[in-house]
Image (cartoon, rainbow over all chains, first blue to last red; front, side, top):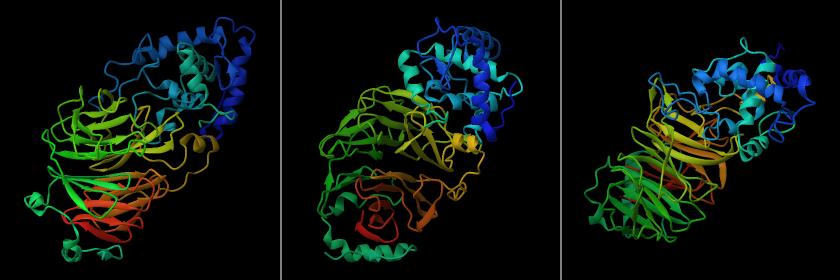
Length: 161
Length: 313
């Protein structure tokens, strides 16, 4: 696992992405065209890994088919919001790669300071390779239009526009 | 024309009333039409180009480019609590009703059509038009949440629950589309509540506090963000608007007075102790501010520093 502190997120993440992608760069034949994460291609092997990671760690809240929790736009009695879908009906595709990575690794509060969410930080649960794989898998189910929209949120330095 | 100009932040109700009485003869107000209006009656105000529309209880007032006020026909379906207009739709005024649903006028308020099919039957407490799309309208429904229409109010979809602040869901008291990028391919919606200001991106991922700069920039750089100077904690926000011509300029009406921000709500400065129950900014002049309160309609040409009474209603 690659150590990435919030204070050096971009540098650490870019190094981590490079390591995570080395294993399968050569074969991208069965992935959607131009599927990338932080400008690095996502491979079929990564999508397969991401599918497994999603099923184990994400599907119980976000739905086996990425459909989110029922009535996900209505607040729970706790005051927190249900888990949103990761498909086109949700808003995941409105976040840059780096935001998605930061929210998954460090929790929603890393991007929206003070925000309380039922989603945990996966910093001590998933490796960077697994986080990138699961986000690559989620991106693989979006339409070309959503991927293109989301791609435009990713400037070259990895930070959101 | 003599104007009742009041200089300085602190303006007493007595001074305002004296000024209004002195200028009362200048207005073409149909006094009998408004005589029965309670001082605690709901109010709304909005610019339509250079014209002004004011709702006070069930009564409606219109002022064109001149200084003359005229009464408009009442809306029979309910009381208008909130208005929205858009610079690219001159003459189109949308009002949110206390009885639920909205009314829309395309002739500057002379006639109204009822819209809002699909909206819950509860008061529309705040309404705004997307700055970047004049046919997209957002409506806040009491006890329910935020709804969106992409066809100028014909049909609606639920987009977001109410914000959770200080351990409770909060109805929106004001709503303003702010033409500043969210980093998510859209712009912001700012909202007033009975316990402060909050905002949500127009992708409706989550209500959130106003933050200086971009959280990802701060996260990536590890640098401390600019310190915030927030509004007084816990004060209810009765009015909140963004200046279309200068989107980072916000005005908020609180019990403590009129507050202004030039950086999209990161830092706030109190401009006046005048109380506003409704507030609007001229679409082209970010310092041209009008408010409604229990003393009538007041206008400020300088961002809230000085005020002139322009109607006694």
